[in-house]
Image (cartoon, rainbow over all chains, first blue to last red; front, top):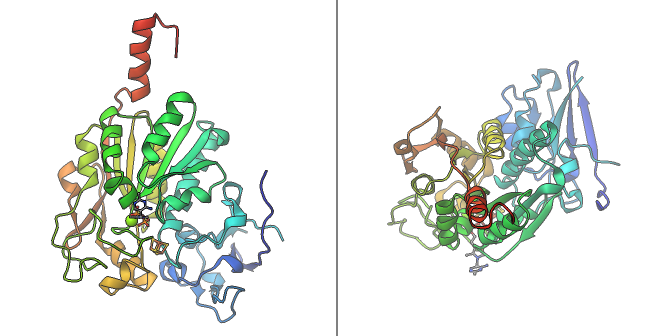
Length: 84
Length: 281
Ligand SMILES: Cc1ncc(C[n+]2csc(CCOP(=O)(O)OP(=O)(O)O)c2C)c(N)n1
Ligand code: SF4
Ligand SMILES: [Mg+2]
């Protein structure tokens, strides 16, 4: 049986075409998503999660082209992009 | 609140965040592996309950802790013999071995050699961060020449072990190199490897910013990631000579070997049925 899910905070940022989701408690502030996003949607954040990491924020969601480079390059399953 | 990352159904989410350092390439590799498995499950080629992850010791081998499949975390270097034993007894299992360059090619090198020689029916994923990450960044046989590590403060004077050439020479059915800097390509490589009989060997170039990167001035995860990305060249059907392993000249990624010779289980079955008239096994 699957054990219970730990408390997590999901922040959904919507643009006209995509929703960028950040699971803030999983982010370790490594910056890889910020660096690989081809249209510079993401930025380092100011708020900290419970572990003290300043989680990433989708600063310019309207620039998102839905390529999911951030999702595929996040080592911590902390960010994912949905259509619509 | 329920977590909804697309890979959560395949993860033991109570163990996330992982133990890996911020920006470690291992999580990227795990994501690509799980997406490839997901595609094979969706197609009906694999069943979730017939997949087992096996790893020895090391940061990479700790990968066995996170997927929501059967898994075994065994003695350092001994993941391959453990997996072969399971496969012989339960041939319906898809055995996925995840290990570091140390686990697979150094302490586990002899097991790798014999599994390759047998074309054993296993998927061996060697995540090559070019060092022994877990124990503090000692020189690995896969550390590029000239680089500084914890145990080579004057630079590594040794030639590198190119595991791609080893796997190709000993007759694995599938031999490919990929990189965490190209996650979609890595996913496709694993996806293909999952369908092979015999031994499929995938080397995944990866980053260990915290321990490997710090000695070469690339401790920032983004800096090491970008440096590796610069060094990687994607090629379609590269020759085995192109698998050359050199930090200065960079690394070619692609499929070096793709053949379909009988695997260990096929040969084993054939001999048993020859001797016992098709009864057992
Ligand atoms: C028999 C044995 N020898 C040595 C060790 C110490 N040890 C633990 S992990 C490791 C190397 C790990 O390197 P690698 O497999 O490349 O994994 P990484 O941490 O780099 O992912 C060593 C030497 C051990 N645990 N067991
Ligand atoms: S020591 Fe290196 S390989 Fe291990 S988790 Fe940290 S960055 Fe990753
Ligand atoms: Mg290693």
